[in-house]
Amino acid sequence: MKPRAAPVLAAWAFLLVFAAYSAFPFVWTLLTSLKQPVDAFALPPVWVFEPTFAHYAELWLDRGFGTYFLNTAIVTAGTVVISISIGAVAGYALARYRGAIGFWLLILALVFRALPRMAVLLPFYQISRALGLFDTHALLIMVLVSINQPFTIWMMRSFFMTIPAEIEEAAMVDGCTRLGAFLRAIVPVMWPGVITTSLFTFLLAYNEFLMPLILTATKAQTLPVAISQFGAEDIRFWSLSAAGAISITLPIVVLILLFQGRIVSGLVQGAVKG
Image (cartoon, rainbow, N blue to C red; front, top):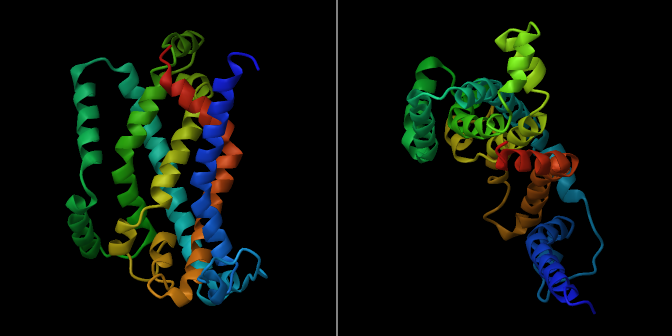
């Protein structure tokens, strides 16, 4: 064995063990969702069983899980589109502006992002009641954009900082306006950064629980709120809850698998200032 082979094998062994350890809760939940309740909580655990999709059928056909999924899709898509649109422009401006005001705006955004949810929850609730926006998609989108926008601006700014200013200067010399140079020369270059920021914004909005719990009743409830009502407190319905957990997780897994290359290149781009 070569001298450097042992450390490499040890590293691979550690990564495999860590991957198995990380994936075990998801695999266990998946198996639970396919078991009958009597098998799901048998001791010792039952590893060989006849799978059933009855829990998924009940979840989506009888309990209206599709409606909650649609609500989540609308809220998440709206949050991502608005957050990225504002974050791209603001991040670009703060990356190119060198004055003290830009620094203090970034600090203010960071302070707002660090506030606990409960600090802004009551004002959001009272304003939504006063304006008649309670339990609407528009309310959740506005609230989630306001909460996640500082993160989006900080992340987009870090990507713009890696792009030399000479690129848009050359575009403006060729006749582009500042906006035209931004759209035609800068955005295509930092597209991996846009995708990476969009995915993180998607996760923040998709997994939000507290805000939809308080600011919705029935019409705009999202998946994280809905799954908490599907028998989580009664072990007889834990297989149903497991089916809900898998249904929530699968869209995220699919997105990560589709865009994993973009995520890696975007994170590398944002980590290196050039």
